Image (cartoon, rainbow, N blue to C red; front, side, top):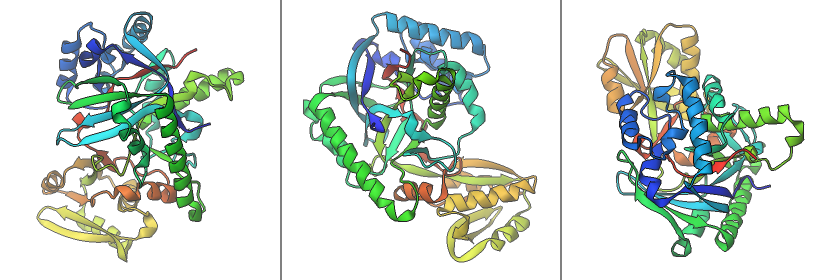
Length: 412
């Protein structure tokens, strides 16, 4: 069975789309005014806003909100909201804030091929550590839901670019499903239907990619990583948890094609020029700088990972031993985790080097500035080190995260 495959996809009617598509629920969590504006805009109109629970609103009448989500799902399924496309993919082109276009293809992954735990060896794995405490609230929502929308982004390391190029060369032949501007400054998006011969060509390209990727890791002695979850890992971990629970409740479901066995994602190529990774820097407060530097020097090595630091008006570089991790971020986080277990300092994760350095000018404050994240090393790093630390990198700006748009049934 294919890891990434076609499914019956549900697309809202064209006239509903501008109010339908809303950004990932884990964005703008500290800016409730963003979600207030979304709520004011959509009102009672059909919208994915009524199908998700923004994290900015968690803790507010959760029982009633979950019941409302399920009721809206049933209402939309029974009404004239969706157009259904069986055995289909959607080729997506998303214009970003700088004018570049990020390409992807929507389909489903087989959850039997995915594991979010740190030392997983499945074909699909998380990129960063999963916070298991974030799963139960999501399980409450998905376990009673008849359908799913998704903001999950799945990454492939397709050096040739052949998978998405296979669709790009057929672009004008693919029926246009939607083309509109996303609300709240999300840019422009277009989606084209991939079925029949175009889907077969895509699947041939995927098989070629998977064979090439498996061969690339053959000399590591470790299981190959075919796809990595870039965004939405907690949502996929929730889907996995719900599917495992269903099998426990009814063992006869094991090995079946039950729709809950699959989860919808958008597959993108990490090599795409429009796919930008930005480092996330570490800021420590309440720290004795001289003490921390002494401990960093103790785990340094000639030719190690060069990581710049700043504290008050001082700056320098430590060279952490690669034995701590194959990637700089892994080595740094393992060192800091060890340090924090025996010290009372606080760690925070900062976007932007200038911001981190400004914050490090405070009393008992220090920042470590991670180098630009080398996209081409992501898969190799996960295979060698396991799942990377939380807050390893950011994929673009908040407005550029995936919007909920396509849906699919997850109950029989």
